[in-house]
Amino acid sequence: MCRTAIGALFGALLCVAPMAKAQQDGGLSNVGVVQSLILTVAPETLYAQSDFGKRVAREIEAESAEIAAENRRIEAELTAEERELTELRNSLDPTDFRTRAEAFNEKVQRLRREQDEKARAVGTRNEEARRILLTSVQPVLLQLMVESGAVAVLDRRVVLLSVESVDITEQAIRRVNAEFGEGAEILPLRP
Image (cartoon, rainbow, N blue to C red; front, side, top):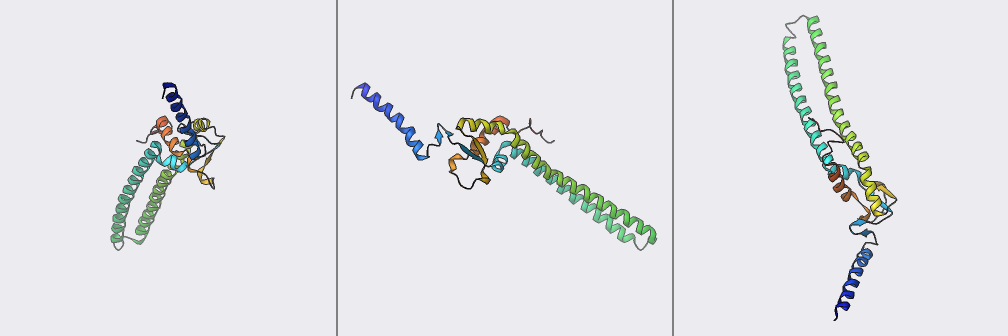
């Protein structure tokens, strides 16, 4: 074969390969970028598998462990205090005992409220972090949408049926990690 014939054959093969790929996925990909009018993303997966979400999960786990240790310490102290109060019951004036018992009960209730508030704050922190991330990643999702020629990005949970190739969650995670890392600038690290 002459050079021009080989060149023409090679050029034809280069044109056929992308067309074959487009036929396999219904024309939804274009050089690694999904081409679709509608894209989906799994927000919970995006949050949980991002470096930011993993960092927040580690912080929350550490805070929860601290609260649990503090609860055990408080419980041990209160048990000892209750035991001491019970032992003093027979030797104290009934009025004095009642005053001490009421003070003890008030202390128990106050400590319970404080510890419950700490636990609620940890749960609230997780929801706050999720909201912050999903707000912060909108420009990333917009860029993926523009690159894909899409007009919308939908929450995957509300889509009844779709082809897997329109889900951009993994691409979004990679870009979010590159853009924000552990996200100290969008939510400061906990000491």
